[in-house]
Image (cartoon, rainbow, N blue to C red):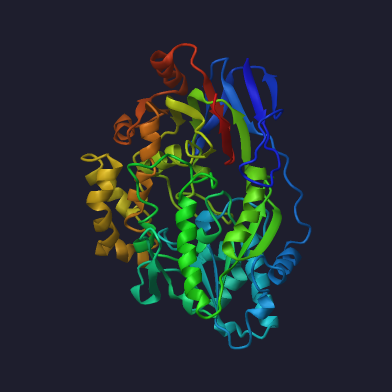
Length: 514
């Protein structure tokens, strides 16, 4: 038999005050064979009887009965901000920015972003703003741009085809004429953003963060910025302490982002302007529904969103494990989702993204401490075939074929090739006009695996279909999960503790070490 550990997170007012007592209930289920995610499929895996299985067991919050009404009320009762009625007037030039489709996730339709954008447009119209003075901008940063069909999945078919490319378009991080450099932060980090941030009479940003990592000032300082700014906080740091970006109380990432936000705020204050952000927080139902909507100044507004994300997406766990097993289902990887809500083919996963999926979006989904102990072992279940999307990931292909066979160290790769890949004309052209990820994007993904590989003693790729590819990623290949467990037991001991994180959906473990 396997012990099934269901954990639930207490509702908290402050992120750092999380109770770890009396939150565990243990059930016993018959059998040792589980079906776990494995790329586009699942596989059966026989786990040792002592395996601890963690599943999310948090009841979903009640959805808001009338999302449009709640959004409208938030616009007129914002947090640390003037209401929308005092921000605009006839003749005002308005930019409504929103997260790209990579930040989307399964939710009850119409989606929050579609409803929110339509409510904003309705209210602007009531306040006398002409529709020709409004621009909708998809904040894609260094992600690939969204096609018209993909934009329609965010804002709705009617808006997508009524507005057209002159009033609904993607942010372009390489359009120098439409970027403005403001100044450096107190730590010397450059802040460069889309001109719409400073030159619009009002910027309204619609965000729907699924994780703690999104929303707040990150929406603007990353989504509407350029490589010049993003390189400061998305590069690998040799002396990084390993605090997860899903842990706002501890991660320095949020300090850097908020300092960049302060630079933008200082610039806007010269003309008595302030960014307004609208954030929707979802419950953890399937599909998700809107549980809260708030609007106002980015920093204070996001603090309210974090409370819901903490309540709905974080499970409390006592004790780290020697070995942790993650089943990697492709539907959870944001950079290669195969299908959108309307069936559009987005992309296919490639080995570099599998590496990032396992190390960043599986190992890295923790607060306080990793689920695996220092020098422990991670087992990832994924076929990891040697295939790439030539249209959407051109720089990934070249990096994997030409650079990785020679250099696997993420710090050396960044130092030697980040500037080249960021400025190569063919990569820039494909990013701007060919719906490809920015040239430097694979180096960012590779760098995010630096700390996990330093922290653990080994990563085993179970079910690997190409052992050479697995080794290029820094993984030890294994044919099955069972063989991977046997290898881990050989290294650590037959009685080593094992945890399987059952994650058909994404959640974060708040780990209290032994």
